[in-house]
Length: 418
Figure 1 (cartoon, helix red, strand yellow):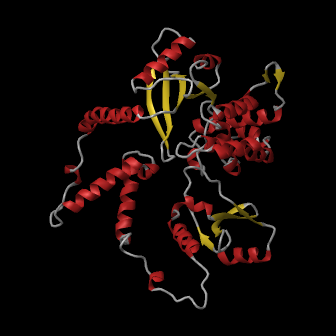
Figure 2: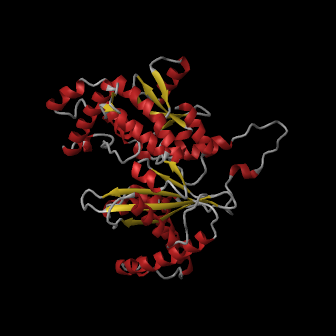
Figure 3: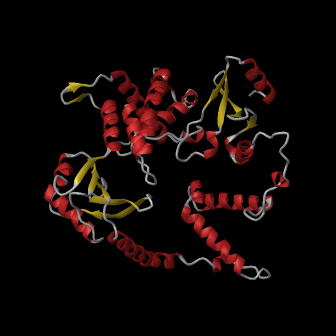
């Protein structure tokens, strides 16, 4: 690894061995990565990142986190060009305590340690501490602590309810929220529902799920999951499926008519179900995902051969090696865990291939001889081109799956791209 001074010299000389690469942004990525790029020298990732605005270098390791980078972004983006006649204010040099209290570093370290122990001891995902439910619980406990006498130490066990109490409270909370949703639905003049059916391959039980989407008077998109019901009718005819959907909607005082839109997949049975007394719209994400699935897994479509032989061969080999890695307990030696392909996961092919590409160079010393020979026949450049191509679809799927904002402009933008 090069030092900061050596990297800076390469940047100043515009050395061809140095590459500045934008990080891959996912929904789980920190927003700080919009402002930074990775640095590669001779295709080796360095332990420094560069700010896109001021072009300063900063040390970064995955274990360090992004706290220091976030502080720089706030400082860098708030900097304004100063003029000679502008008088400095003392507020430029300190943060107001009226809005955000200063939290001592000792407290931050203790909370960080407690969160880490929580994830390890209870086998919880690390992202739990970022979830709204966990943060709401922590805030309530913190507020309760402010109301209790400071002179007396309180055991948090006395504040938390027993698990059986929580389980009993679930039904009460569900009934309360359901009544609130029914009241909201009664005031809706227009709305869209999304319908989907699937089968549990282990139990053989069929399910139907319905979500409700409504734009309020202040132009905010509200999304509600009405329920996920077992499908218990005799057969999957269009008449029975329509009866199933209408029975669920009636529980919320909703009904289909010519002004109501229904978003669904494009199976013939579903198309027939919503042929009358509603406006059916095919799911754009489903269209895109099926196109990718057919291109990578089908030998022919409508009796016409699919001319993707080389790509399909690479895809099949990747899928085989991923299955081997997941079953051989070798993932602990890799920087990232591989992900299997799933037809039901939107753009699952991209996620499998993209992670495989990121760990490609690590596999030379991880794979055994029987799988190494197959791996050596794979074309890394082709894999990179496929991932670059599929990334556009992934961005489109993410935008079209947005459930907080309306995305009409994005829809037409991606339509032009495709």
